[in-house]
Length: 295
Image (cartoon, rainbow, N blue to C red):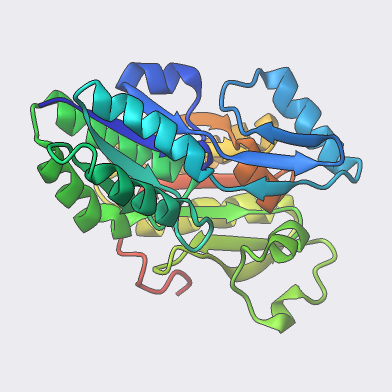
């Protein structure tokens, strides 16, 4: 039996990528002083730049997890059509969407007892989350059953990593989306924090470096030390409206990692609101996230 693979707005998968791999998504939302909007992943480059420029100008937004009504409506459409559902959700440390989805799935079970809705807490976000969905899609194309795919993603999600640099920790701090000691937040003028996704699915600040170029080099160094089976692996670089820096990071990674394929994309509105303009994230499959990042 075929099944639907879904992510949510934090996966940062554009329309072409979702179409290529047959992946659906549940829309989160965000609000500002001009009201609430859906977190669309089909924005143009101009729309992304406009959004991040508004943040640079001082505008602040709040994120909204996937509403229960959105889950119920969309899930029922798939179930009624005879499909099972595999939902690879944003880390539960960053969003409550996976918990809402499990609640809705439980309610729909009584109405569609022959169908399955399996929810994975990916413990990650952005295109690292998307990469797990792509792997699920490839397994589906090979004829794997939903139970096999679900088990594989659960067993391997701890090897799904990202390392990033933000212009300032203020966005993550205000959103409550970063794990760091209070001393880490002090004396950050001209200093760029380096963050990883830890074993709890949190954004963890692990190091501070001086200046943008040093931050890019540190991202590339950490990735090169921790990546596994690099030859042919796709590394995803996502950026919050800083394409030039993303290209520079691509070159640095290519110097350190032989045989990897690197793709660049935008950080979508939900992740972007939490990390701020100028953020760069490199997503990859590597060593277990519970192992120390900085040697």
